[in-house]
Image (cartoon, rainbow over all chains, first blue to last red):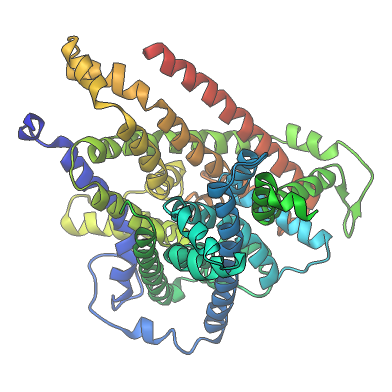
Length: 263
Length: 287
């Protein structure tokens, strides 16, 4: 405790670092309410018109729908794959386990542009035109490591004897899974669904290469960034997106903590 | 067959197969096709499937490719160094100087749950000639003319990426600091180390695994980053991914794009392996 009596350099540094981390994230919402088209000080006044202007834009709404479809399908597929794989990793010891565990984490460390370009070449070669389907295929690949690691920590704290008890009391394998296992790991599943949805919802590079003429929301935003006149609308849209992501992931964090005993 | 599924290996493999096959196929198949494409050539309308080294020769001799590849690796190295150096004190602070560890870890990760594209875009607005930083400094009278070195150069790219990767550096280093047995630190003090010696001879070497993990997680994807150099890099800050995108997009030369992907992957792998070997050796030597 003697350490705390000295001048807290590290604490001051930590606060300064937090300012650095939050500056860009808070800046978009701040200027989205600014009554002017230039993002600079001094600010002009408060307005909500940039948000109001988002409503009637047909292409934006279509991009939003595309993103929702891709996000929901990605979340469902990645979480199902992750659920089974995580159960295998936590519950069983088997040949090739380490290889398999390493393999599913691989998407985290391959540069995005290489994943995107190589998948584009593959899908075209297979006769799959760029579309929301190809984006989903790519996003499941990217989201899988997140699903597996969340589900692994959910199964880690799962008491196996509960399953054995249900089995001994006459439940079938499927009945045990449905009535014992699933309810206990449900918070983990919810957390995984939310996180994988957000990974997909925010992803840009893969969608940029694979979406063809069906842009997702980040691809739409990319196309708007070039037009200075659209800047305030883009800020408003970006702020809404930031808010949605943070809310989704805070909810996910809540469920993830409920799924592990340690929290 | 049903017998196999009763064994532990059978059950484990059956349950994990869908996930690992999915990832395995989507790594192996595109890679195989990239390799094939890299030996083909693009004619105006079609792909000439005669096998040739032409793309590799072009990638090796074109000064632009060499320049961009080298710059991507240097920028990624600078980003890795900056991110780890900035993040280390924070990880140290959370591990040793605060009781509210969970709160701090949450505070540090929240900003990264937002879209990467939007965060980079926001940096572009902050650093621009008529941007937030310059206008704030002008309004307060700190400067008389807008600063021009902020945006559209390597500095902007390094700053933006050091921000983007922050938690990927903080978390692994924090974990390795947290694992240190506090008895080692007491022992070092009892044996006459002052605080600085204790840090450099005990704490730092014990966190080398965390530093290596953080560096790899940051370095590898950064070499292939597309969004940041496009938005804040200007012409000075363009990287290899920008050239790759051009080949797959406007230039429509997929064989050359495929070759660049493979060359980039090989270079990243070589640098990463070299880095791990050197850092591990250094970590042993300090001790």
